[in-house]
Image: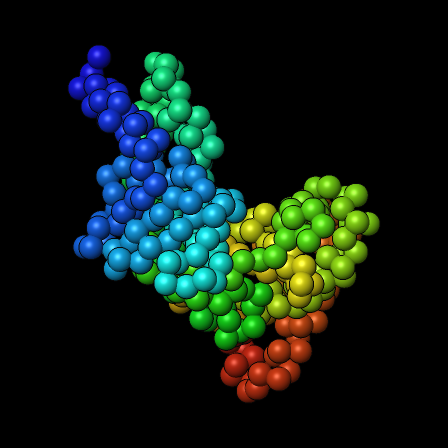
Length: 306
């Protein structure tokens, strides 16, 4: 047995009773340093647990809303406010790679397991998180903070940030689910399960407006259809997660919209629908250019995006 394996086993022995009895976790120290057991705390969170952040903010968890590739989304409220929010925190502490993605649900099962196989798989996950790549999970959270105001100014379909702490969390309004089923509806659901289109015609009718608003954003990284959710009260699609590029966010490419991540992703499931939305996006770009102005601006948009 290696020293590293022994340390992991001892850590889990100390950790398991702590999970069962404790309902409060200081995720970040006053200096902003993540808890050494951060990657083990998040998968085992439960209703009514309280998370404490570096500036003393206390967040009470009511439910886990889901997660993307890089952030965990928690439903609940800060103790200083009765307003329910969706709190995004880094999914892990460590480095992210789409090629060697660490599975969040599997980590929970490994933590709950007591056999040697679970311990070995935890070690493997820890090794993957330690392998350096261009960005870590915290970088992705900060990218959203950096581009949020820019996206809102452009009229992109994103939520306002209600509260934030760089490197720790972003609090945004909760996207409202179907009041009948209490289930959220993602664009991935609508594309993969075509029967949903007849069940939710208002969601289908809102797709052209989504394409028009997404036309205003030049680059959207780490994009997936499950990151676009339908808000039932407002009947609008909302982009809930992305990797932004602060230096290349404003404007739009002058060429066709066929390469836009929204169009490409929809085209995987429905080429005809993707073609229709591509035309909508192209018309919106043309309209924005006609409003936009000078010849120099037009030439600039032709080569590098406005």
